Structure formats: structure tokens, C-alpha cells
Length: 340
Image 1 (cartoon, rainbow, N blue to C red):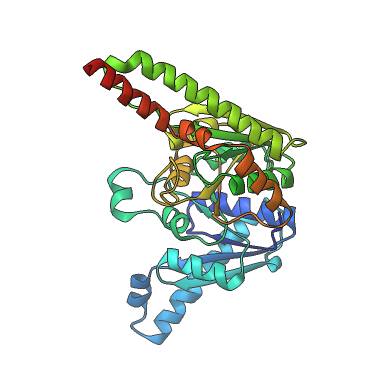
Image 2: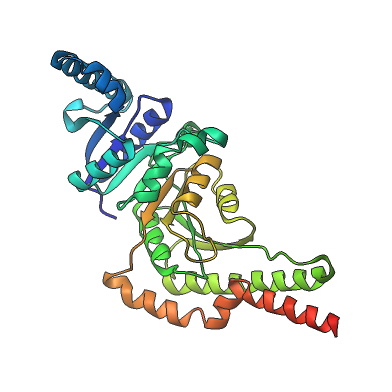
């Protein structure tokens, strides 16, 4: 894992201060360059722009406040402001963050989350959620409860990496990149697969229970083969659970020293959802930061191993059973026998 340029976006909130602490710790660990940015609301800027001097004063005041915010934060980190670049922009926060990340060729974007919920989230949305939805570079999102994470040690004191793996979809790239990140932090790797429950009619409950147990055992064997084949020498374990993917990942991620590493997926696989939705749910329902990675194919020295694993570890029947298709077929057959 190579990190040379880090972009941290702040909005002067406690959540963004936690994100800045995390970004500073990452720059120290990887020797990277750090850029801290703030995006002004265009309406406020327009209101201040009745004269050229008013606009200039507004921008200068914003830059001064950003300098003070960063300076107050880094005092506890014993860092110098000379090694940190400050950027003040105006516009849509999501667009400006993504544009600046591209311009700086940032290896990672660090952002805090306010954890919006209910009608406020539905109406206003979330900058963090929007960034996760459109990001083309890795995004490290720090949750509102990051203080509990930081209380267990420095922000980079990661002891466990949780890697959600969708065995019914594309999983090999997710597993390999999560292992690479676990290695960078010298942390234990936990491969997790969440099975979606099958909704069984009351008259077929006994058969449904048997089918669920069979799916769980099948998934456990498949995930364990992934672990032993791809990571025989790594500190890796595997876990299969039944339930809602976002809820279960958030539950498993609870506790200090945990980092969730997951891909930004669209509607593929059994976790069909809007891109970044599961990552955002985990972020707002656990105390663990989420490192969201844009999807890409595995290359380099891992290609042969990953392709072999993809074709050899899981057969077509494995995928059908993991996805629950066999359970649905069994239920349909049982209903036919009842009618007869």
C-alpha cells in the first residue's frame, strides 16, 4: 500500500477535526503530503461579493479561520503548519472535493461524517455519502463516534481489518486489496460474508430452516477455501453471518482498532444497493472508520492467483447456493408436491 498524497476536507465541525487527526496520523505513517481543504457556500460568497473588497475579505477570513482550525488541531500532533497545504474553494462540496482529489492526484481522501438520519438525510443528503457515491479514489470516512476509536490508540493503530466479501459476485479484488491494507497496518484480516435470509412461507418453515443451515455451511466452506488459498501465510480468519449486509457488517465492526475495508459497489451481487450506500450505513452505525475503495480488477502479481481462485474455489453450484437460488427452487418444488 503506497500513499504519497492525502486530501482531507473539513467544515470546522468536531467530526472534521477527528478526520484531520486521522489524516495527520496517516501522513506520519506513510510520509505523505497533506492538503486540507474547505469549500465555501457559493450563496455566502455571493452575498459577500457586492464589492471586490468584500469578496476578498471573505476569502481571506475563511483562509485565516482554516489556518487557525488546522493549527489548533496539530498542536497535539506536534506537527508544523509548513508541511500542510491549505486550499479554500467555493462551490458544491462534493464536486470540489472530487475535482481537487483528481488535480492533486490524491491517493486517499479523508472525510468526516455527521451521521445524518431521517428526513434531514433524505432532504439534504450527505457530502460524505455523495463522495462515496462518485469517488474514483479511495475514501477514508471517519464516523461521528471516532472519538471512541481514537481513545483506544492513535488513529492509525489498526489491529483488525474487516473485509466484507460477496461470494455471489466479484470478490477476489476485494479480498486481495483488503489483505494488502491489513499487511500495511500489520493487522489481522477478517473475511466476512453476509447471507441474505430467504423469506420462507409459514408452511415451509422446517424446509426453509434446513436450507438456511445448508447455505451457511456451504458459504463457510467456500469462504474458508478463499482464505486458505489466497492468504495461507496471513493472519486471516473468516466469518459467515445471516442477515442484512449493512447491519451485520456494522455489528461486527464494533470496537476499537477496527478498520472496515470495502469496495464501492453498484447494484451487482446479492448486496444490490446504490453505490456507497452500504459503506455509508456501516459508517453511521459503528465506531469503525470505513476505507471505501473504487472497484477495479486485480493486476500484477496477484492476477494469476486471483483468477485461479475465481475459477477453482467456487463452482457454479457454490454460487447458486450462496445466493440462495437453490433454496428458492426447493421451496417451489415443495409447493408443487403439496398441491399434488
